[in-house]
Image (cartoon, rainbow, N blue to C red):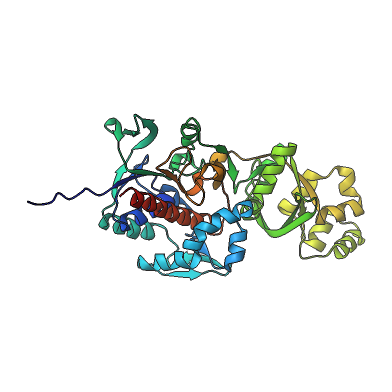
Amino acid sequence: MSQLTKPPQRVAVIGGGPAGLMAAEVLAAGGVQVDVYDAMASVGRKFLLAGKGGMNITHSEEIQAFRNRYGSREREVARWLEAFDPQAVRDWIHGLGIDTFVGSSGRVFPTDMKAAPLLRAWLHRLREAGVRFHMRHRWLGWQDGRLRLASPDGEILIEADATVLALGGASWARLGSDGAWAPLLAERGVEVAPLVPSNCGFDADWSAHFSEKHAGAPLTTVAIAWRGRDGCLVRRQGQFVVTATGIEGSLVYAISAPLRDQIAEEGSATIWLDLLPDFDADRVAAEVARPRGSRSLSSHLAGRLGIKGVKAGLLHECLSKDEYADPQTLAAALKALPLVLRRPRPIDEAISSAGGVRFDALAEGSAMLRALPGVFVAGEMIDWEAPTGGYLLTACFGSGRAAGQDVLTLLNQKK
């Protein structure tokens, strides 16, 4: 008499981004039947978009500096990184047959700089491991203890031994991350912090003249100072772009979290632009005060200090005529031009989002929701944030792996 074989345990992964796919990989390796459901027509839409300008996978800096990038969530994110650190990310990519290199900034990229070959190799490996993909399946919550989804054939209910939610944040909704999951979890007693933009631009409410003339202009040699929570000025040099409504770009994204929080608390945030970061204040003051003969002040600034184009426009936009005409005030403004930021740009324009499932809503040392045993969360839908530079993607990978391992631990306890 033959013995009946018990069917494998089944896990539903909701969301086919980096965190969901990584959870699926761990689960499949653990002998679980994995079904991935995604609302889009294909998985990894935002992953592919992020790779259009060069697929920045992770960063090569030493691990403690790397962890510091996660700010107040460093301790929680460290758990993910301990199991899947930046070197492990590179080793994993190499295992997919794709080489990587370290750029001049320390950022790590696939050799061909593209996301699509990496995603294709990854999906091939997942399918070979038995992972099943269900596209155009939007998660709608639960009904009678089962997962409720909208599919091309109408609403369906599915049963699973455990569920991993990896639905992303709320930026770039057209790629699948729309934050629609937040009220579904909140109504089940899960603590969810409001989703807010991260790595975002800001509105400065330019005049129509300045906006029309300078929108799209880059500032490639500039520094920004802002006041930290302790009241001390913090300064960072880099690049950003003037937009039709304000500012955006890598330097702005890097400091977007404290600026966003200050605007939320105080209604606005003031930054100070150093338009001449390679010149000290004494030299700037001496050049401004130097006799200019018949030349206009604008021509004088352009000739002696290289202030022209958008930098000259910023002076006229942010200073009154009297301030611009006063040599001492003008020289001071060239090194610290005050610019008031009114609001962050809408979350759908942001590179990423902050907020989401609070860590207090998770079981201690686990990705499982306290209020919903058997339901795990991963990736950007958890309340953490990081700057660009490979930190976002590395933490998404790590949290997905951690969620997968936590599910396997639970399922093994049930056997």
